[in-house]
Image (cartoon, protein in one colour):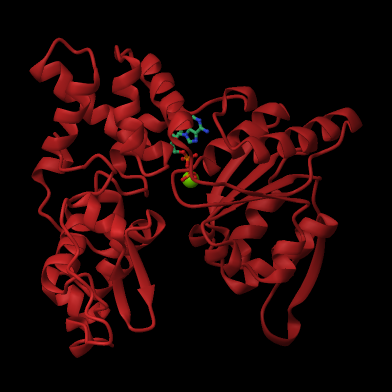
Length: 361
Ligand SMILES: Nc1ncnc2c1ncn2[C@@H]1O[C@H](COP(=O)(O)OP(=O)(O)O)[C@@H](O)[C@H]1O
Ligand SMILES: [Mg+2]
């Protein structure tokens, strides 16, 4: 069953994972991603800076025969944080334990995990910015001194029993490094900032995944998919799967530019990676409000979406692509937006009130 065909058009901020161009993993991604993950640092495409820095950190630790420093990976969803954490464990020939901030409700949950770690083990803490406060404080001491205080009993009779931990490597991942409290951030020996991928790197991701999935694809077909993947390997892999379906049903299974473009047209992902939601926001901004400035609420009503959906799901990518700007007077389309939708901007009336001013705010 193809979730993209059966699900109603429904775009909430939490629903990002259900968009074909959403960067959060959906169920199908989770099922296939394990097979597509590079296993070694040399196999990991792009992110040259993070890769080179991490290579040094790991090599030095190995040379010392020590456990690697704690590593923080920050970056948007789908850029390879989970993959890198597994690579770190593999390169250190260490086992890995995977958990996440939201999964740790109480400090006791964290204590249980920490106290069962083996020496040298990698603990991957995804969405580390979403951990509870008491757990966070326990983590400070564990990271710094490899020690936790386990509280036994309740009330005045409660006692703290110190517990030694074996040295371990914490790998934290976050989409928002800025949300981490400084004491936590400071306890990482190394922070890798993951960037969005360039088209050439994404092309390599597509070729690599096609090889693993046994899909025949030529250079132009891979470039076509890469160009629509919003700088994100997870999206590239997902688009590749949809293109593969199309190629199997409508052609002989091999993917070239024409097949890739036709397949992604069916799914309404345009040549810049905008989907229907993105385009409806841009279209309203251009056609109804002359390119703005127009207030977020007005724009949202015009496209029939929640404010949050427009602001959190559609706009970040439009802003990143230089198609839309957020200004104090409201949302404004850039010349690139007019060009992308093939429309001509109206002549500016100097000093005259823009139509959007009536609604701004
Ligand atoms: N540098 C890369 N090279 C090849 N594939 C990658 C790379 N980064 C991510 N991927 C692929 O993208 C998918 C999502 O990566 P993941 O590590 O789960 O991202 P994150 O944890 O940052 O959300 C994985 O299936 C992985 O195979
Ligand atoms: Mg992840």
